Picture 1 (tube, rainbow, N blue to C red):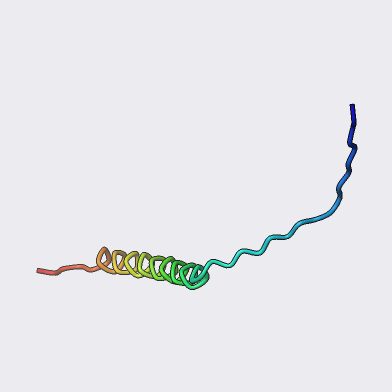
Picture 2 (cartoon, rainbow, N blue to C red; picture 1 turned 180 degrees about the vertical axis):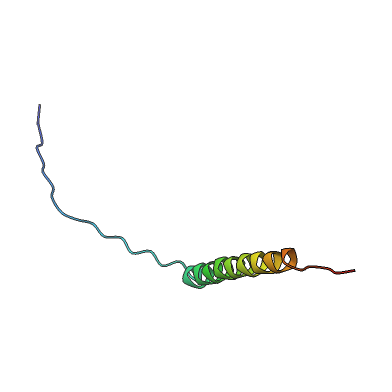
Length: 56
């Protein structure tokens, strides 16, 4: 019976480029930032509305 003993050492690097993925990630990050700003503005508006006093 033939026996093979092999040892392999090394590093394999695979580079994958998905067309348009970087642009979509940038747009998603922009959307997240817009949502954060919107939430902050809505919170500020709610605080402002709560501080309105009406005199009759």
